[in-house]
Image (tube, rainbow, N blue to C red; front, side, top):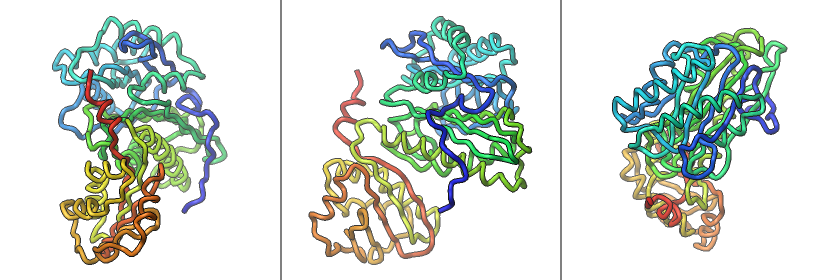
Length: 404
């Protein structure tokens, strides 16, 4: 494992990098008296990039932000919770565009430099009178100390704020990366039901920033699953305003790997927080597949196990039930030879050569009754490896998602 070349900023978040302000206010979209509108702004125009849901049904703010991000410049991000503005047709697009235009007006920049996000219930129009009020309140509340309030304002079923920041040196200048995220349900690889906003004061060009972000997303948010559902609103946005004054980071810069390592760490930490905060979760499980014929096969096998409702409900009951894992491997689409498969729970052998291991059942049950454990699956067919982070599936999750 590479030694970390950065330090974690205590109490850090999106305003830890120089030149960023944030706010979180209540505008009344949520029924409960909770903050529901966030604004994150750079004091100057920033380089911007983003990664969005791969769901064919995309919410209005996703479509608008995908269009704006093409110029790789942004001044601010505005986000509401409590309403997804998804499946709202042309009117929803108009509402997202109006949100961007109104926020741009108070910030004094072109509407194309505003990125908009929404999260919450699908199918309802945004209450634009409340959004308009939220924009004004959010603008007046912008502060260097507003990161935590912004992180709280984007929460829906989350039980805790998710934020982090790290700092490191590039060419003798201090560079900081800060971020916040939300997500607890409808979490599946290829982006989860989540929003993530990343800020940095690094000097870096748009092409390099985009490549770094996509690599970090692939190694973090694309490796988590709670329930196998993919949202219409998933978005990761990153702004870099250059206020650190470091030598410009480009593809050939010798310290770019340090930036990548720090960004990877930030997104992995947030991804782990999302999984740990999953709706009704009592166990967090690392599913690691090794010895696959290819990396693609390893991913197919890991995803099948991590998303199996039968596997996840067994874990909720503290039951290893390795037969369900074997079945999932068989239908995963990966190349599998039954007589070669080994499965271990936290180092305790459950399956050896496709058949029951010699370990006492009590030891296996003890392994899967821990709040965190690792499942290691060796297919013995090649060198492909892949890891997914998942959870159990509990009665509490079902009750929570039964609706009003």
